[in-house]
Every structure is written in structure tokens, then in C-alpha cells.
Amino acid sequence: MSELDLVVSVSDHDTLDSIATQAHRAESLGFARVSAGETTGRDMVTTFAVLGERTEQIGLSTNVLSPYGRAPTVLAQTALTMHEATGGRFRLGLGTSSPAIAEQWHGGSFDRPLRRLRETIDIVRAVYSGGSIEYEGDIYQLQGLSYDRPTPEEPPPIDVAALGPTAVELTGRFADGWVPQLFTPPGLQERMNDLRRGASLGNREQTALRVAPLVRCFASEDRHRARETTRSMVAFLIGAYGPFYGQSVAEQGYERVVTEIRDAWDDRDMDAMAAALPDELLDELAATGTPEEVRDRIKRFESIDGVNAVRVGFVRGMDQTDKETTMNALAPLL
Image 1 (spheres, rainbow, N blue to C red):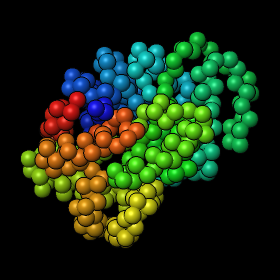
Image 2: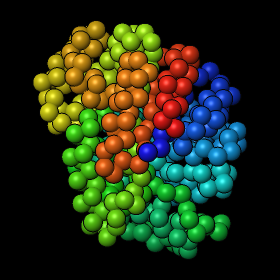
Image 3: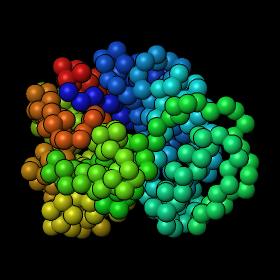
Image 4: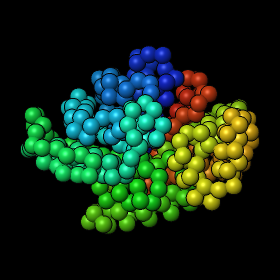
């Protein structure tokens, strides 16, 4: 059986204490790891330092940190310090993020994102290995400084959030794990071929990579409310949350649906966006409905060859009681 991770919606919590309480609850239930995304709210380095201090065994992952927001050497320093602070429980999650975050928040240009990601991984690995860092890349040039602490024999693994075939191949070739999101089970199986090809190019076994798809979950005896809340969230991700999720879903055979959702977003018609997402696609992308239905859909992702874990993500509009119900519904799978 695959592991289950939990993605914490940090923006739904008023305090760091509340986030830590949920991470501790996930640990007590048996979730393998806890992660959270970073956009324009709390920074995840400080947040996960707190979670590391408040928990004992559960793994901790950033989901994801962007090289547009931090230099590669700083990302390596962060990972090594978090490794020390958490007793080796940390995994460094990287991704290119989106043009909106890179340009409107970090003030950069969303230029050559995959090249930037590749060079970032190279530099993080170089810092991990110790010694002076000499690097001449297309984007980064480093000239001989070194990390001034001893580096561990087993440094933090590097996970990459990626969608497209080239990005996933890069992940298989250079990273230690892949975090896909908004894939149908058939779409995920097809994209796994790109991961395997990348691993082969890197003279690695794909089985050495931790593949952990993020699946939005909402379990409730109020089946209608759970499904409609999830439908709105998934439609928003497809139509409004950057260009890449919608493009990925379209390439999985749902181009017409994506077009309808995006047209509704152009009019800022949230109801029409949700209405354009059919039950068939909702059930392929998310796990929502009764507790039994949610467990069954998570099992479907777990059964995909090459999947090591499923990251359980919450849905915008859930309250803390809804989240506790969903976590408890998944407890039999832990």
C-alpha cells in the first residue's frame, strides 16, 4: 500500500499554532509527510521550522519553493538547515511556479523556467557535495565560495512539481521525486513514461524516485456539498490558476471542457466555471463525496504502477471540521 501525505492549507489557519496542531494530528493518524505550498502568504521555511519542532516523526516537504524567489545556493542552505532542524525528515520541493508569482510577486521575468530549474538542481547538488562551487550556467554563474558547514552523507532529497513531458523527463533525470497535480489516472500513467525516460537518461531506476500525486479530497456525508465545493475549486485551478494546469488537463483529452471553463473565467463567472466541469472529469481529477467514495478514488491512484504516495490536498471552502472528517475518512488507508 502507498503512503499518504497531507497538504496543509496554511492560509486557512489564523496562527502557526493551528498549523502545527493539524500537522501533529496528521502525525498521530499515520500520515507519512506533511507539505504546504508557498505563494504570497506565510513563507514555508519558517512555517516548516515550527512544524519540525512541534512534531517528532512525520516527514516535512515544501510544495514548492521557486528559484525565482530564492537563489539556488540559498535553497541549498535552507534544505541543509531544515535537514538539521528536523532530524533528517525534510525533502526540498522545487518547481517553476507560475508567471504571475515570478513576475508580479518576485519581480523577475518568467524566462527559461526549465533551464532555471535544471541549473538550480545542479547547484543544490553541488552545495550538498561540499567544497567550493564553480558553476558556469546559462543563468547562474558562481565563482568559488563554499558552504561553511559539514554536509551530511544523505542530504535532503529533491522533489519537483512538474506537468509537461519535458519537465517530467527532467525530473526523472535529475530529481529524487515527482509531485504531479491535476492528472487523471490514465493521464498520470501516460506521463509516467516521460519520468521513466528521464530516469533512463540519467542512468537511474525510476523506482528510486518518490512519485506522490496531489489529489484534492473532500469527504462528507453531505455528498452534494462536498462535490460542488470541490467542483468549484478544481474548475478554478483549471481556468484561473495560471496557464499550466488547464493546458495539462486539455492535453489529457478534455480540451473542450478547458475551453468552456476558461471562457467562463474571462467573464469572471464562477458558477459557469463550475458548471462546465462534468462529473466524469471531477471524479477523474479529485476524490470527493462520501468517505467510502473518497477512499475508493484514492485507492485508484495508489494502484498506479510507480506511485509511492498520494498527497491529500484540501479544497477551498472546507472548514476545520470538514478537514478533520476527511482525514478520519482516510485513516483506514494509513
